[in-house]
Image (tube, rainbow, N blue to C red; front, side, top):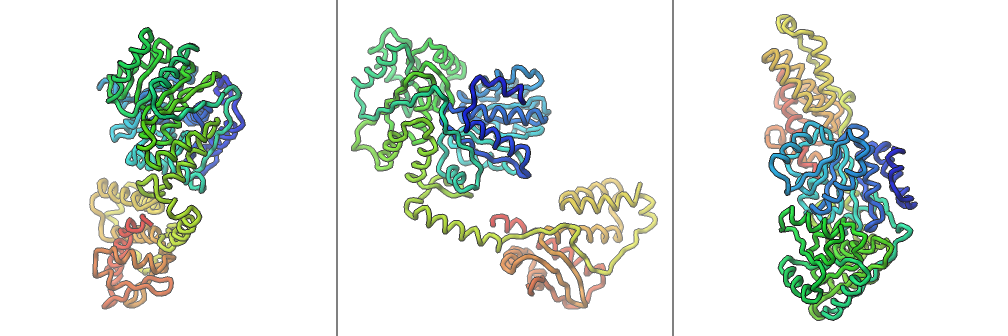
Amino acid sequence: MADFTSQFPYEPTPDQKQAFIDVERDLTERETPMDRLICGDVGFGKTEVALRAIFSVVSAGKQTMVLAPTIVLAKQHFDVISERFSKYPHIKVALLSRFQGKAEKETYLEMIKDGHLDIIVGTHTLLGSRVVYNNLGLLVVDEEQRFGVKQKEKIASFKTSVDVLTLTATPIPRTLYLALTGFRDASLISTPPPERVPIRTHLSAYSKERLISAIKYELDRGGQVFYVLPRIKGLEEVKDFLEQSFSNVEIAVAHGQQYSKQLEDTMEQFAQGEIKILICTNIVESGLDIQNANTIIIQDVQLFGLAQLYQLRGRVGRADKEAHAHLFYPDKSMLTDQALERLAALEECQELGRGFQLAERDMGIRGFGTIFGEQQTGDVGNVGIDFFFEMLFESLSKVDEHRVISVPYQSVQVDLNINPHLPSSYINSLENPMEIINEAEKAAETDIWSLMQFTENLRRQYGKEPSSMEILLKKLYIRRMAADIGVTRIYASGKMVGMETNMSKKVFKLMTDSMSSDIHRNSLFFDGNQIKAELLLELPRAQLLNWIFQCISELHSCLPALIKY
């Protein structure tokens, strides 16, 4: 690790150092998977935090997925990671994108599945069902706010078993809110690198004279210009207009509908300084790091979101020259109140490291959505944040009333006086009877799926078990399912069956309401801390066991009805 970190050419800022420590602690000391948000301004060194996390995980023999919202950003991440890991030939890095040929893609998919690729970089293609990971350990998501809700839900599904590191300059209101309330861990990198100068932001109504003078100023000092429009439609018109004004300057167009080779070549030429003015859509919003481009012009600024504008503005000012961002709107009378608030917020947040404050303003303007649902913005302004918190915590306090708390398998007692004897012919057919019985016990202790798997394998190997073996297995199933639904003891006395439990009356009602069989539902009632059933007559032991098995199975199958609580 020391060897890897020594390749970082800059002195880390104090915030960066803290982020390194936070991430390392999450990866090594936490019992649950990491879910950390690294919030830092454009060019403040978030990528280095991710690179060190990737190195730790890959060194431990696991795979890493790096997810970026655009192909331009994915390519840039791929180049940075490839260069940084070039000293380690055994670590294989690949880029997966829609621009690749079918054969190349198939090869990569096979390598990912076999575990021959360590770091996979790409856009949302990586979330597709065809990408099967061999041993995924870390997911790095850059600019989470740029992904759609469905993609975010797929990302969320990884969080239960894989460490997740999210990088962003301006989190969406919901993400920011979860970080502020401690639902998600966050590290804030707000110290700028020593030589950085704030970006000058000029907001005004569109005028050709202002536009020409801004571009001329940048070209005269040997720099390059980004010219961003919200739609592909107007790009060619702008190009024609600029070619008349700057006839001897190399001008190019870039957008997401171009062929891969064309787009890649254009970006490459711009990065090399051959193209002086790049007219583009917000495809350049994330991640492009071009030191010599220090003026950005954004037309129809009212059609962009706040985080988008902040990101676009961050494309410039990455060197020690003072950078300029010119934001043009058509006419103030055409702007909505929200658009005016957004522009005012952007003008205020001119200093370096203001992405987090800007996101807070965004949360104030738009509200912050629902934590568990699809909506990412909401109406907090109408309720007020303190009252909202009050409502939230009141709701959370009720969660326990609707929760099933499982108990350890070993603590469940089944007091039914039934101990079957296995027939000698069946015992002789088993290779090692005692070992098989212990295996069954071990499977039951693990979980219900392991027990089902064991039963299936047993039948596959030795055929259908005799009734005495079936009784033995049913007792294991009853104990396992009882543990899952929080039942600690099962007993029978005459016509009465009792189950001692930790569940609440509300949970019992929810479960019985979800039961499909009327026979069991109508015979069960809740009494103190017990679920009881009164049978019509006293059943023989084997039949009683069967009745309890079916009843517990019914209750167990109702568990999904409680998941949403």
